[in-house]
Length: 308
Image (tube, rainbow, N blue to C red; front, side):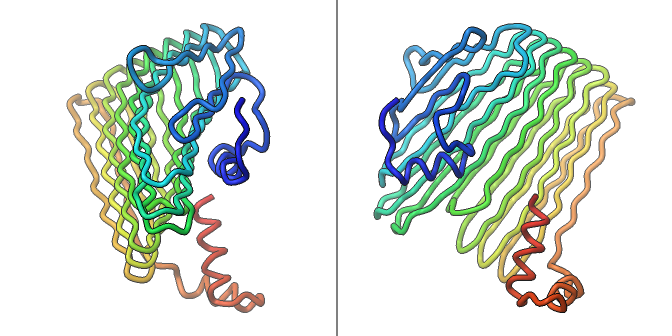
C-alpha cells in the first residue's frame, strides 16, 4: 500500500467511507496507478491482461464478504478509461463498494471513465454502491462517465446504489442489464447538480426471463443553471414486472428532462413508469422557518431529507 496524502484520504472517505485500509479484498487506484491491492481466499483481484482494469472473481457460495475498488484522482489533466469485470459465483452473497473522487486544482480537465461489467451467476446476490464526488479550486473540469453492464442468470439479485451529490461538472451514466428468469434488479440513483453542471443518466433493462423484475428509481435536485436528463427504458420480453420512477426537485434556473420508455413484447409484461418534477413547496419552508431555521437552512434540510 503506497502512502496517500491528506487529499487522497479525504476523497476515499467521501466515495467509499474508508478511514483506513479496508478489511477483506480491495484495490485502491490513485492517479492512474494501483495504490494497494489485496485478495482473499474467496475473492481474487487480478489486473486485466492487455488493458487497464481488473478482474474480480468471487467463488461460488461466498457469504458476508466485501470488495472495495475506489478510485481517486488529484492530478489535473489526467484522463483514463478503466474496465472492471466482476464474476460472481453461484449462490454467493457479497457487497461491492466502488466510486471515484476527483480533486482538480489545475487548469486542465480531469476525467475518469469506469466501465464495470457484472456477470452474476444463478442464485447469487450482490449489493453494489457507487459514489462520485468532485472538489478542487481549479478551472479544469471534473468529469466522470460511468458505464455499468449487468448480466443476471436465473434467480439472481442485484441491488445498486448510484450516488453523485457534489462537485462533478459533467457526467454521462449508462447502465444496461439483461435479466434471466426470476432475476431481480433494484437501482436507487441519487443526484444533485449545481452551477453549470450536466448529468445524463440512461438505463436500458431487458427483462428476458419469466418472473424477472426491475425497479429503477431516481431522486435528483437541479440547482443554479445545471441540467439533468433521466432516460429509462424497460423492455418486457417475457412475463415480468418492471417499474421506473423519476422524482426531481428543480430550483433556480435548473432544467430537468425525464424520458420514460416502456416496451412490452409479451402479453404478460407489466411495466409502469412514474415521473414528477417540481419545486420545493412553500408551506414546507414556512413550517421549518417557524421552528427557527432560515430560509436557506430550511431548503437544505428539505433537500438532504429528499436525497437520503
